[in-house]
Image (tube, rainbow, N blue to C red; front, top):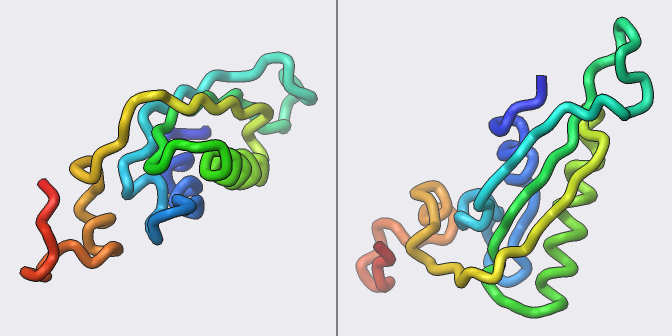
Amino acid sequence: MLTEAHLLAALRDCYDPSLPCNIVDLGLVRSIRIQPDPEAPGSGIPGVPPRHRVHLQILLTTPGEPAESQLRSQILNRLAGIETISQTTLDILPDPWTPSEITPSGRRILGLDGNPTLVQIR
């Protein structure tokens, strides 16, 4: 069964074009919706794993066409490698991203924790 946790683990392989951190730990993934795909090839045949449609909503750290197309390609290519996903749709939200959305793991990856010379983001 495909879960949000499976998708988040896969999306940790997708990196922001301008920051050396994955999109999950940067807090760019806003929503994940997983729905069964009853029209997928093999649907309803015993022994064939169920397939799913995935819909993601994400933010960008840097608005602009080059960053958007690069990130979109990374995400769609990564999720295309998951056998139980039949279709992925991706919406880029217009909301601004702020560094306060970085997870504790992301802060460690970016070297923002434990360094008194860096501005602390809260």
